[in-house]
Length: 270
Image (cartoon, rainbow, N blue to C red; front, top):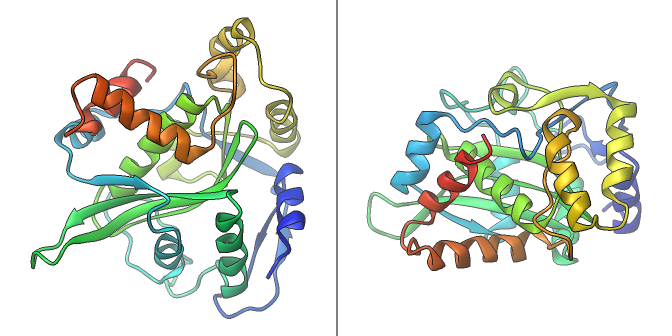
């Protein structure tokens, strides 16, 4: 297992680990020449995705099944139409080794790694089935997305929409996507040099901005990759921000269909 202090230091420095296969005991440290981020004010909410959110096709949770999400992200799978393809060309290999998974599960126990899950009712009535999700590492005003998966169309997109809404609510300003893909580009991701990313990363680890500073960052967010902080004060961890979203949905009379609230919130900034 990678020591958590070393792993967090790597993320704070703009570096992350990968492995050559699921069974590989070794890891290598990656510092991409080009980096992808998703500006929190620049998320592209398509009409079809907004409709999916409003219809409430999925029950969405946070940190309810972290290990299960990692298992699904690491497992070979056939790509779903309209969702991203995470696996290698033959669909049989994974960069998420058992050692890497154990390291992130440990970070999760320590409160630094989080997941968002999408569930659907099982056809046999046996309960809810995990059909999509994502996981990543959060610190200060940064969230580094690691991987996502879909077992049905749009599940990973819905998880990402909830992630963006929660990060905005919690005062985050930087959502790292590591490598650009057509899937991420369609959702508003932009590519930049590693040095530009590191500059944004360092800025996002500074003290929380004031109310005036948050407004200023919001105005420049789409161009810089910095999103609008939700306010002048504390930065919230993803689970707390997610909980506030549910409270806001309930206050708006949408407790039974919080996806409608998420669609409304993202439509205002898309």
